[in-house]
Amino acid sequence: MTDEAAFILFQKGMEALGVKHEVRWVLDEMLRLGRGDSYLQEVLQRRSKGEPLAYIFGHWAFRSHEFHVAPGVLIPRPETEELVDLVLERMRSRNRTFPSWHIVDAGAGSGCLGIALQLEAGNSRPQLDPKLTLIELSEEAWPCLEKNIAQHAPTANLFKGSWLEWPPERIQVLVSNPPYISGVGADKPDESVAEWEPHSALFPEDLRRFPDASGPYRELIRLAQHCVEPGGIAAFELGAPQASWISEHVKQNYPLWSGELVSDMGGKARFWIMQRLA
Ligand code: GLN
Picture 1 (cartoon, helix red, strand yellow):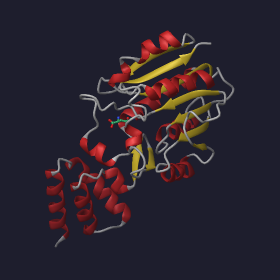
Picture 2: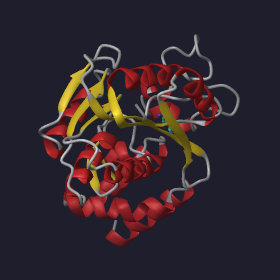
Picture 3: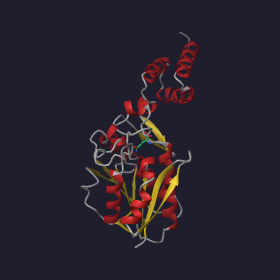
Picture 4: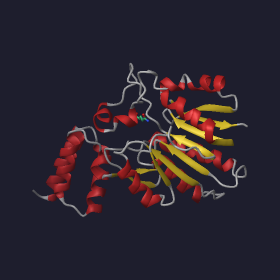
């Protein structure tokens, strides 16, 4: 088959799958790898089984950084990129509050959230050079996370365990994109997400106890209370079930904190950012 015929077949196939916009990215990757037409066939075959492009490539961009990804970690999402801006803004405006910064990413997965924050705070003005700790319980996530640490954040600490077991230190920023899908009603992941991405990153373990998937936030807010210094920040990504609950929960139980819900680009309440007042 000529190059052009192979390409047209590939393009038609991708179009039929509803992923025509990915064609360019696949061509870029083919060039990067120095592969020929057989790469297009391989991608189309895997893609037609629903495998996400990020897992086929083995890497994915998050903000301006390229992260290793594999089926053991959640694929970095564009919403989560917005959380980086929200946290950076707040760190910059409080740059004189602390002599040094320590960021903890609880349930780090690929590490994209915490690592992007460290990289960008280090490049920003004022330059903050934060220390970084990544907490991750899932063994399946570790190989990928370790590669990203080696590549982007060689000074970061990796704590292999639950955020409940992490020996608390005094920190200034706690961030997390925990599992928050309840599985109830419309709150379900897309079919391909449910089939391919790690369930431990999507559904909380304690769904039976907290069917609104608020369990991780209850723990994370308690962790923030234990370790974030006055003036410090805790910021989490969340979904609809938690958005309707979290403000009231913090107001009633954590008087030292003031928080706000922030919407994502799609207009959905997606982030909870709270500051420790005292
Ligand atoms: N936003 C993700 C999704 O829609 C869910 C990620 C998570 O639970 N943290 O698939």
